[in-house]
Length: 454
Image 1 (spheres, one colour):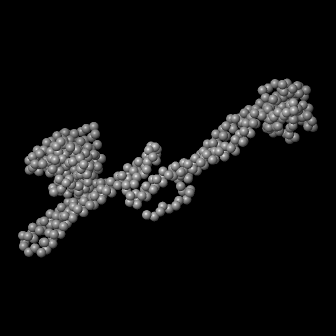
Image 2 (tube, rainbow, N blue to C red; image 1 turned 30 degrees about the horizontal axis):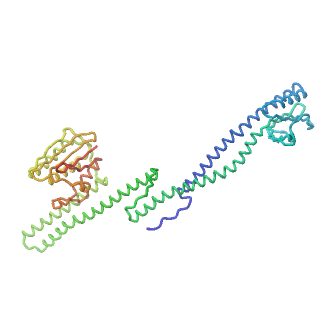
């Protein structure tokens, strides 16, 4: 068997799953980081900006209404109150500071809001402040810069900036490591299935997919595939046995037919020629019956039989089958007991159903023993319509009950009896076509065959 073709990396399902895992992991991490930044930094900064803008508007209104001196007094009062350290600067139209506690400010006009360094020296040390500042133009062209300390929010911003770099590195490492581990874990399970399949294809039908006992999806898949492989192995073994049995069953009639025809060619007596011709005809008929039965079973099992399903009066059909076989039973001194419930109906192919019941009755009479009894019963139960046919013969040993439906299988004790060994095989195929069940059990004494149709 040729080696499997090598696949490109991007053609591997596990590689594509790993890429998807990395993308989802990094995307979700980035989304959580952005949400934390939004609520921890950006939103608080916006709220502080709104407060400062209102203050700047109110202070500009004081200047407009009461003059510059009132504005300066309001700034001094503001500097002594408030939860956050306030900052301000008032610059005349020429840029000269009239009042300011900001250490510096930009030469250009502040548009919107801006963060300014507002560090303050105190007792030889420098205290760090960051002033969120806005600017208003006063009536005479002077500049009013108003701010508040947001050092704590700015510190969080710096922490987020540093954390972002670490987060990208750590998340990438975790994502890549996790994807590699996931890819290897999935790859090993898939490879186990693939290798087992290739060994089976090479002819080792006993190979099975190893299970880990975790009960996960791969174990469930492996268990299902193992069951399928088991059934395939059983089916191939059955085909092998059928092939052997076909060869064995056909060898004897073909040999007899060949011998009869060879003798017929050299026979001089007319009576002898007639006898040989009749023997050859009997063997030809036997061969024809074997081939017909095999063909019919194959057509039924493959679904190629044109089944004429319709509502069938099952009680009447069973009674007709009993009546048909009654002369054979009487010839053997057997008693046929009828326990068929009246009025039973079933959706079925009447011809196939009659054939199945007829085969079972023929077996019951043939192997029931002289002077015995054959019982036919039918009733409706919770499981459906049940048909029971039993005899008082030697019965079928438990070890053979699963094998008697195989083509050409004959019990060792009945190998010399006339027949083709296909009767129960045909019954099994007909029952399966009708979605029913076939049960072979012990009648104590004898054999009981039960057919259950839904």
